[in-house]
Image (cartoon, rainbow, N blue to C red; front, side, top):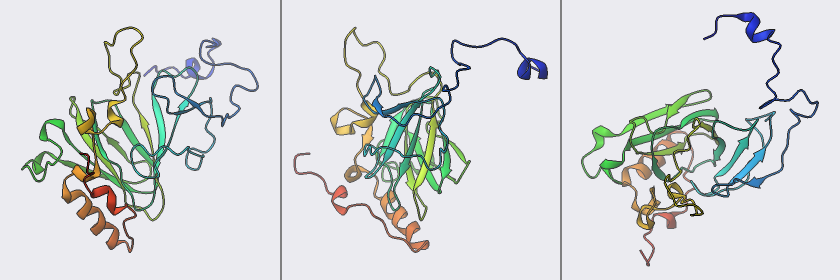
Length: 238
């Protein structure tokens, strides 16, 4: 990109806008605070010493037992998070535009992704040819929404232990609603179910193929699903 080794290793310029030579600049900070946009768990720290094993606060938004934190590092220009699905569990499908690249850092799993226009039941509705599956393990990488427009994507833990991911979004958070009037509260639409005006598919509404395949895959590894059967029952008020 630059082609000059001295510029990289011997440049005298001190980039104090974002970095500091202070002794405590890279001292880890485990304190958790709400992020200023959606109120989700965030850590202001310039170093995560052990990304594979660091403690993650309970979140529960994506799957039962889902854990997640947003490291806010050196005045972040890139939005990112570290998250983890429990053994025998998987996330609800949710849709947003292209941006997120997910990297597996612990365990193994797979992701299904399909265009939002194919609906919440792509196999039942004859759109199986539009659905893509990507399997990955540590350092494996997947694009959650590869098609430019909004795509559904859903992450499954195929491990005998936790399935840990980190997601990098670049400078633009795909879940932000732009053009809101001043003072208007941001809408967390990827955390809201489709029947509530969001883009998450509740388990009781998802394509039956997903649960069936997940349980069959776990059986091949001598494991069982730990998903509560009541999650697949339509609530009386829906």
